[in-house]
Length: 354
Image (cartoon, one colour):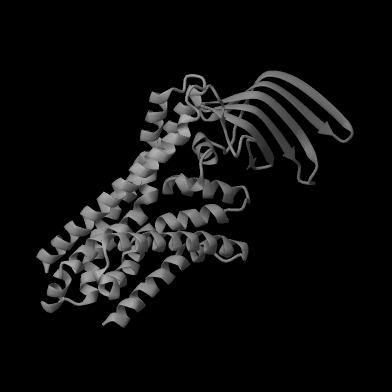
């Protein structure tokens, strides 16, 4: 049993790594074509574009791994089926469940390495890549489509137009709302920097509203204590799906403390926490195509099946997740439902093959 487990592990792991390498090379080439359009802007040359693409590859590896595992499982186990090795294993007394379990073990061991990469390595490297590209282009690192972002900090509603590398904010507007829902203070600052746990605003115009009277002050600098730390700021500047579990926990806590909606970020958080279950589902749903009537199919047909299954899973995962949020169900339901449906379908198909 252990010898067969190791053999299946080597087969599935090798085909998965080959599939992952091919997908990464394809993604790298397509991204390079896109980046070449920006080469020549400021100091952004070909070498800078190439370095940027190298830095974001760990995040792309993390994103492409489920599809690579699905294709690798189909090709690896399919090769064993084509060589009649699976028939020999079944004749030796191994059931479909045991063979599927051996493939799943291989997938889980690979998943642990990929999850560690996505949690500790990919996010800081991707953030560094974005900062270096923005600096090379001599551009501000704009957030939310170049129009900045809004955040709530207690009684204050804050708008920041852009973030520069080095944790510097540009064009900040802050509005304080009193307990009677009346505007009390308006602060406009040219910039801000984070120093020893506080934001130091620069070039400040502060307007104090008291009834019909308005008193305006011009200050060269103003220190402000805020719950929006650089860590929270990094989250605001990133796509939720590209954040680590630790950053998502920090930001969800920040949203909770300010009474803001956390559903979108909780959905992404649950998807990351349930990633091992997603990887298992990818392999389980592939096994019926290996053991069933398709076991004699060629490599091209298996590759097409894997790509179609992966596309179906990602579409259902996206659509069901958003539908669940739309109707107010818990994010855990949206994160787990597509995976459970695909896994249930895979086990049902395996049971029909017995």
